[in-house]
Image (cartoon, rainbow, N blue to C red; front, side, top):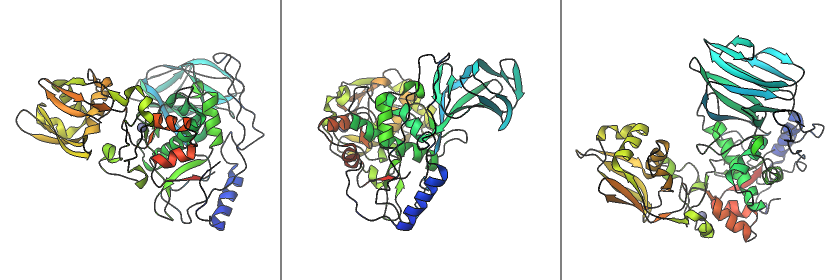
Length: 449
Ligand SMILES: [Zn+2]
């Protein structure tokens, strides 16, 4: 259901290509193959958790406008796989699955079983993976359940497969591989309140799909994973987090992406979103120092988020000493200052909204830093009070041994869709598509598979 009128007919050759690609691949795993039954998991440790069934989406209907020449990065013609890093590094974890499965080490199958894996402890020692009584040498260990079965990692259920990557001699990180659509069902449930409007869910489904796809294809961060399961990317809780509202929103928008760019060069973009913009959205410059997409130019008036607790927030003080430790730990250009005695707002996005800061040390040395990076450093390094510095939509005032952040507005970076604002608009009967095109200037919504 797209409310936008067609502006340009899609090229028949491209439509044929997309349809052929879809027919050849069967589309998105779990979604288009009606013969696939959803997993029914009824043995410990998931007793009582039956993954809700996935209905196949409506027949493939290309929605114009569709780019006539290949954009960059390449658009997906079938549901892509996401690799999501879950949790911190660990030295021990328990893996389980209720179905037939295989274990792969460094990509080679080392064990197969026709029935489920009872919870098994996994650890590393001396370059060996140890799982129950078995051990194998190698760098990666993967648990691959058959079909649509579910894996659990420390009793949290995930769709797809679980891949462990060695970090040093005894610890490892866990990465959940699963298709984009199923991933989103575990994202929306963590990003939105349970009782929020269905159109808010649908809008965020399209934005979060676009963001995840962009991050996986155009912004590589690590050879082992594409996304984090927290606010460094998007919140994600696996199958365990899914709700009827998140599943319904993903199903009803399956394959729909936001795209922007010049005619013929449309591409998914980094569809940022945040909790509460505080009255007007920010351009992507506040995060990146430049703007990668015309859809993220900001400046969109938004008072529908005024119901949010943090639409306005009280002054908060952060110690100069703590702030200096935080910025010098995260941003090397500030390390030579020798301390932090003053902050000057070097430029503003709009009157009263800091953009670039000049940090001044005790001997007069200076360093430039994005205002939002100051907040990021404070949060990353757990500076006391930083959790109450809800945004950089505020004034910075010298208060002796600390800085006071006054007249605060909004929560988060304020770039792209405003979640509280979207909810306000949905309550005024705005459909998801109208909400999205309000926040992402000039963007288009295109169904790609
Ligand atoms: Zn807002």
